[in-house]
Image 1: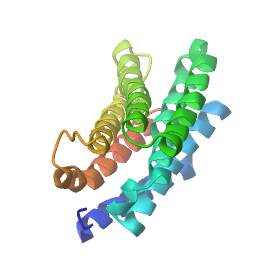
Image 2 (image 1 turned 135 degrees about the vertical axis):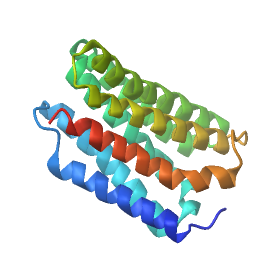
Image 3 (image 1 turned 180 degrees about the vertical axis):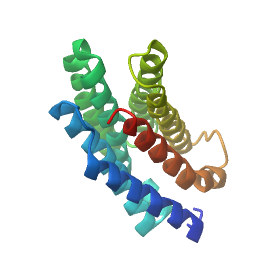
Length: 202
């Protein structure tokens, strides 16, 4: 496993600061359930960054870390659905709860490829939603153009999740060292895009 460099730690530190900042300022005008979902998402992002900062990349092999990281796309996508797709609130809330439970149970009960496949599916659906919905709203003029940055963050977090999922399956899309080298920067870019995107709708 690659050893974490000072640059990796610096990038993770900035990521944590940005996530903490977003938690502190909240999303003005959002309904309480959406605010709670966003808070959980950025809180999980903050927690994942801090744990990696403290324990290094070896922590990526921990079932706890994988389960916690699943909260990030699920919670953020749930917040977006709650705000912008009211007709899908109940259905997506059910998907989020069941998806999180599936990832957790699969990771604990049947580790290996089944658990990784469940992780890839849940991350994929949530990531695509975070990517597509802000872009669609921006193109239609139903949200400021800058809100599309949330979609950019969704694309980045989806890429990161899939890279880690295939790595866990033993079929990495890139060499492990390359994935771990770009991961801290990917987390920072993801968080920066989210914070900038949500800032335009304040």
